[in-house]
Length: 40
Image (cartoon, rainbow, N blue to C red; front, side, top):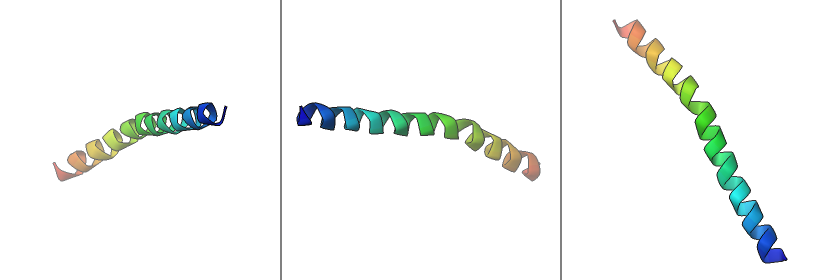
């Protein structure tokens, strides 16, 4: 049972990491657009 819980926790961490990365992409793109817009 402990092995299952450890596996569950590990997969949850990976999911959280992937989710935060997906959320960070739009904000990163906005910053990139702002930087390129200012440089023009």
